[in-house]
Image 1 (cartoon, rainbow, N blue to C red):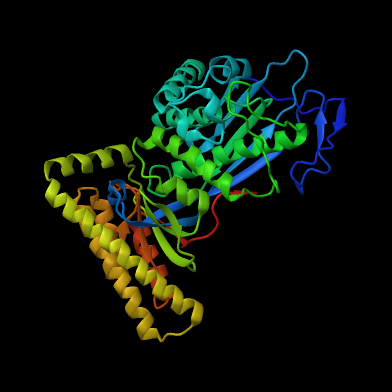
Image 2: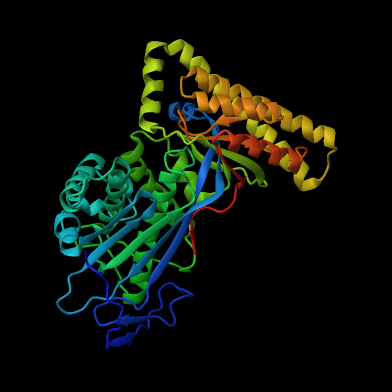
Amino acid sequence: MLESNTTPLPTIAKSHNNVSNSDDESNLYLFADGSCPDLTIAISAPGKVILHGEHSVVYDKLAVAASLGLRTHLTLNEQKSYQGQQGFIKIELPELGLIHTYNMIDVQNELLNKQLPLTKSAAQFNWEKPNLINHEELLHMVEEFVNKNSGSTPLSHHQQLSLYSLFYLLTGIFGSLNVPLKSFTLKTETNLAISSGSGSSASYSVTIAAALIQYLRLKAVFIRIKDVSKSNYKSSRVWCTSLKKFDDKELEIISNWAFLAEKIIHGTPSGIDNTICTYGSIVEFRKSTGPKQLNLCEFRLLLVNTKVKRDTKRMVKNVLVLKQRHPEIIDLILNAMDEISKNAISCLRQLNHFHVSNEWDELELQLWYDKLGELTDMNQHLLQALGVSHPTLDSICSICKSAGLYCKLTGAGGGGYAISLIPPHITEEQVVKLTENLQSQGFETILTKLGGPGVTID
């Protein structure tokens, strides 16, 4: 395994760029090899929960989702290279027990220097247009590279998918770029449980895409590259008014790249997870129309981890098979879930009005929370009818109901997390008693909030 050397190079030059009035680059320096001293990129993105619309959202029904106060953090540290030293990319994914170093020459020759597989001509593609990637062909390239260069120890399923996603994004974004890629170490840390329905894979994919795009932005500023595209690809200039945040166009590009990575992990994702992890907040979402932020206040949420791993691809496929066998019945269930989402949005807006204006009494506020809770209960029963619940999820819902709270699964189901919104009329003593009860039966509980920021440069 290659180790990075941290001794500074002797030759250093000041960068005198002025790219689109950037407010961050005035004191940046370059080493002779084009690398930057102590270049560290820190990115974080939230997890997500689906409040309403699991599985039905795949069939263009309305869903309601929100970002969590739990996040994935990524750091990318560029390393200086030295005469005789091979370039490298070191990947550290401690949650998956993975640390591996890849030779930069192999990455260049087997991925970045190859022509990208596209659905249109290269002259129409650049890093801003992920929708033109031939997904299956690029994935095949990446799979061959990872399987060949990841050492003799077999990779676990999650390790494999994480590496496929990472090198897919690296190749898709940098394969068309005329931007020097220096040795770097990339490390992620997360407080999101994997395969639990909390958006851990989308949060991971968003941080990777955002970090690579931030790396591109920094390089464009440091080296002052007028056109970042290789000669045979569509021209592209990087205009950034600030290196401290992403603009709306960049957020859209990040989300679109993350969606392609989600296809690797989940097969046929709806797009809601990468959207939430990119933009944050509470949103309504329909595949055909995209996300719409609801601009609501934050709500308190109890997350309960069943500790049962689930397989999103399998759950989605099971619903599809059920729909093919009983189309009329399943369509009725999906339509009912669509109506639940619409009614839940109305409740959330009314509750937001109460919280912002303070124009309510306790009885009226509790009435609206109960109405929202009843919708939660109905949604859980419909998900049971689709066959995506689990005995542990059913048990958690029962325990919460005995404590006066409504509860449902979130995400694909079959395990993972259950969620319960905590109304203001539920006392801290009641919450403590409930969490202790759940923990005594082997479940993990987390008190957090809904809403909050999406992907950020930390």
